[in-house]
Amino acid sequence: MPRDGTKLALFIDGINTHAAARALGFDIDYKRLLTEFRSRGTLVRAFYYTAVIEDHESSAVRHLLDWLDYNGFTAVTKPAKEFDDGEGRRRFKRSMGVELAVNAMELTEQVNEIVLFSGDNEFRALVQAVQRQGVRVSVVSTMASQPPIIADELRRQANVFIDLTELQPKIAKSQAGLLQRRLSGI
Image (cartoon, rainbow, N blue to C red; front, top):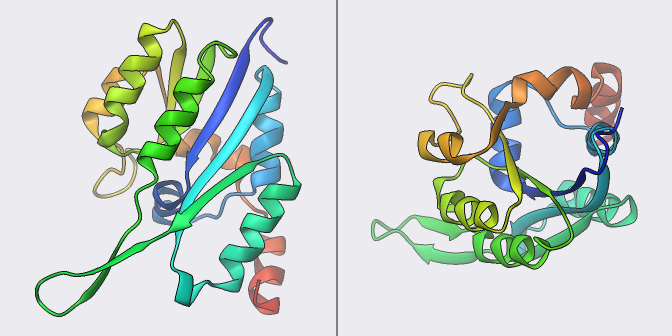
């Protein structure tokens, strides 16, 4: 049942959230995730952020981004920046923090709650800034993985911390659907 007057926005750090769900042994069903948060209030916007490796753009990632775009999310992407780690290994910088922070600050006058799916401590300053605007912040990540995905400082700064394990029964892909997608290569 929606809370009266709650207007919320979702901000999903795709790479961090994917890693948290994988560490817990499940995949997120984003349709079920939307349904869950629509039941908690009026969902004003739902953003999904990820950096993509241009020369390795996987069909699974492209399929997910297309699905998100057509099903109520705003998918925000940018090319991952490639660099050499100094030991000859190819690495990628995949941060979408600035884009997420700008979008969150732009929505503070339209919502009274922001739900941030990330455990990355780089978002602590954003959480503080949003809270100064009078907006509650719920952070979704996990402490159940080893090591925990959530930064302790971010967890403590949030008005509410929601462990992904609490949401798992409501947002996990069904095992039958997951098996079918894996067999079909999606």
